[in-house]
Length: 136
Image (cartoon, rainbow, N blue to C red; front, side, top):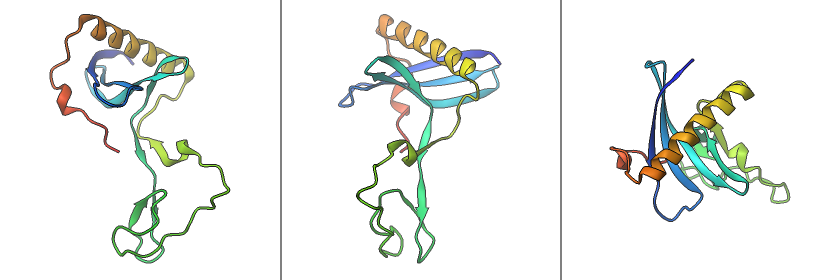
């Protein structure tokens, strides 16, 4: 599988850790949008597109975001998560698409970070940058 295009959309604003969104095209046939470039404590890394995990209401089965106290449809109380349990923030999100192997993840990350650095150096934002946003 070959990466045939990477578009970088530099993110400006309050969130200083989120640096950019990227759109990656594979083999001129498949696109993955909203791969994030994040500034971590040990450098830049990528985060795959994800969505918040939802849990069904015991009354009406409407799917509510994890951590909600009341159902957004029927207003009924939702089961309370034990406060003494450590919160696993990764468990609140699930990747929509992600690499299967470590080698491919490293390849993808290296190509995206190279494209990001080139975009930052050029100082010109990609067209359509305002069209990309976090879907959480």
